[in-house]
Amino acid sequence: MYDLIGDVHGCTEELRTLLTTLRYEDVGALSNGPEVWEHPEGRKVVFVGDLNDRGPDSVGSLFLAMQMSKHGSALAVAGNHDDKLRRSFKPGSKIQAKHGLQETLNQLSGETPEFRAELAEWLETLPYRLMLDDGKLLVAHAGLPEKMHTSEETGKMRSHALFGDVDGKTDAAGLPIRKDWTKDYSGSRIVVHGHVVVKEPDIRNNVYNIDTGCCFGGKLTALRYPEMEIVSVPALKAYSERAW
Ligand code: MN
Image 1: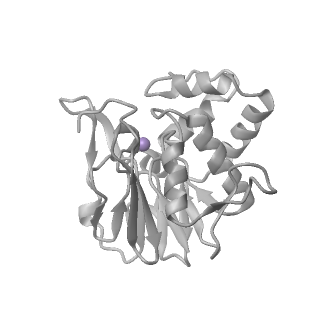
Image 2: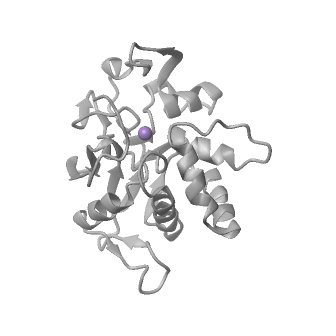
């Protein structure tokens, strides 16, 4: 019923290949406009966030996800990169366009004002967490500990959903130090997230991290739910530098 897809980061070609592998078809070319992908059995894609930045075609990835979402064949939660792009559209925004955002903004400057407005409006609709399948499945970009699954939506919850349990400290390589909440997770609800780049999907205590670093030359990964099968396609190249 769901195909959860990890951080796309502008890897639109790989995303199309993954959708095809999962047996989605681009029916949009026929009637509803381009990039409207549908599954013959009515399955839905769930994007775990970070559609843009770092890869070659952020506009294409955002457009595809927006088209599917409007068609009803995809859901998405906000990632920290989508959230920053969303905030950059606000009048008087003082966003620092780092970590690939400037490239996305450059790509967007070549699009029409109507498209940018439509995208800004769509990004506003993205939730920070999604509860699916009668509460058996929770999706948040950086995951969420159980106490934040159904709590009121607070700043702390939003920050955890976007960035994980961080306090601004970084390690020797300059990467944020994160407290690992997954080792203490004992819930029966399945939690699916991205955000933390891993070579292979990281699965423990009912928590699934499916960000396999496509934009860094890894792969783009889907988790088929409820089958719990992993389907990945390799990156066509490394578009962005990273110490693995
Ligand atoms: Mn990411």
